[in-house]
Amino acid sequence: MTVRNNEERLSAPEVEPPVSAATPQQQQVVQPKQEESNGLQFVTPTEFVELPSRGKYYPDTHPLYNKEVIEIRYMTAKDEDILSSQTLLRKGIAVERLLQNIVLDQSIRVNTLLIGDKNAILLAARCSGYGADYKTQVDCPKCGTTNTHTFDLNELSSTDMTESRRELSVTETANGTFTTMLPKSGVNAEFRLLTGEDEVKLTKTAQRRRKNDLPDTAITEQLKISIVSVNNETDKRIIEQFVDNMPAFDSRFFRALYADIMPTIDLIQSFVCNECGSDEEVEVPFTADFFWPG
Image 1 (cartoon, rainbow, N blue to C red):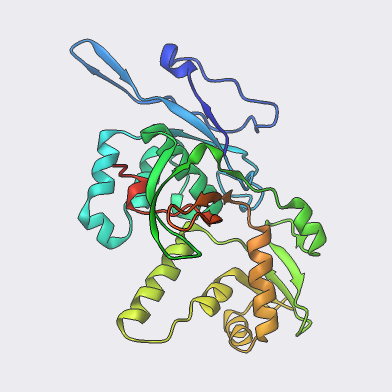
Image 2: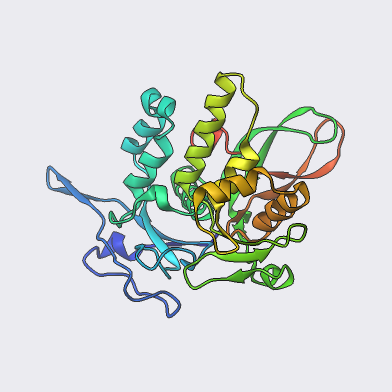
């Protein structure tokens, strides 16, 4: 994850920061909010966060289309109120409300952010708000012992899957989707990357089914949302019928392919168990400690 601090705004807020050659010039830059009290001015610092997607997989009508970075402001005490609100937490919208607060371009609907881009923003906000050291509980994959471990969030970086797409014979379309031939059925499937809104829908569906003691349908639900056409057929009923009857070989192939090509933050770090001494690679967990260190 690469984050560029907008130091210029602290000393001269009326001057816009320079835009790199790789950054589209049309990106809207919003001045940080200033508040005055008893003659003192408070300027909330901002920073630029590189998007793992580089803006390539948004529709051309989206504010982030072809944008490589997004500008956010540092978290404040008011944002901590959002993260501690039991009402927002119960509704599952605390993170969405936080994102809406810190993203400067208010034309961006944060629930339309691709999941990888959303994670990059949350990581940047956490690092600027509380630092890069993230102490949390980790279960050893080998012996199961719970360890207290500190991750260095500065070591996390975006994944570049361009080469993987070539090797996996995945084709990018002009509208930001992908196409691939499913090996068992021979069906040509077009699919899109999931957004934060999709993630919320999947979570709510899973929670509702668990509450009603219904079988888990996480795999098929994700496939039904991600796949937008099969053999150029876009009717949702046909797609859902195909997914329900998709060969398991194709389902596994698709899920592995999706994980390989999705632009995101690589959350894997090394971990040494205090009990058995095993050196393992684990995924950095997003627990309550992430935004409430200590």
